[in-house]
Amino acid sequence: MGNSKSKSTSGTLSIVLDPCPTGKPHILAGQTISGSLYAQSTARIEPSPINIDAYLSGKERSRVRYTETESYTDSQGNSRSRTKTSYRYADREILRMTIPLAQIATGVDAGAKYRFPFQIQLPPDLPGSMFCSENHRGGKSGGYCEIEYKIKAELKGSGRIFNY
Image 1 (tube, rainbow, N blue to C red):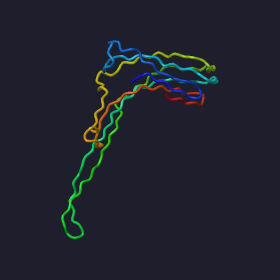
Image 2 (cartoon, one colour):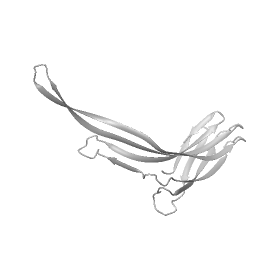
Image 3 (cartoon, one colour):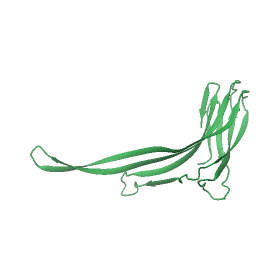
Image 4 (cartoon, rainbow, N blue to C red):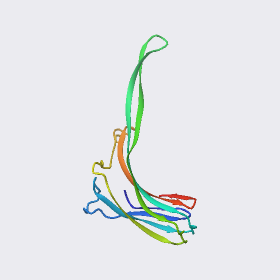
């Protein structure tokens, strides 16, 4: 998870995470993460309910490469075998947390700037981020597995949906 920025015709959103309280460059299960969502409007948004939420999500993905040898008899009656390479894929969501940030009903002026601080405690049994791949072995496209976390913000309202 890092700090990023996204733009649309209506404005920009950026998420900035605070430094880890332990002073280390990683966040562990059970720790609290905090940061701020910064929003700037480049166009006026008429008064109507606007909801701003952040989402913390985690996914595990994997691909397993395997080979199967198949025996068969050819058209001349000879026994033959062939090897087939196949792949199995898995993708599973392991975390989805909603962080409600704000509701704005007054409309937004062009050029308006907002800061929405947030804080959320991670579950104590959360596995760490990781990536492992067999692609380094002889240049072959092998299997891989990964666990990845993302934080994302979404602004909904006034007929607009702006994802970041």
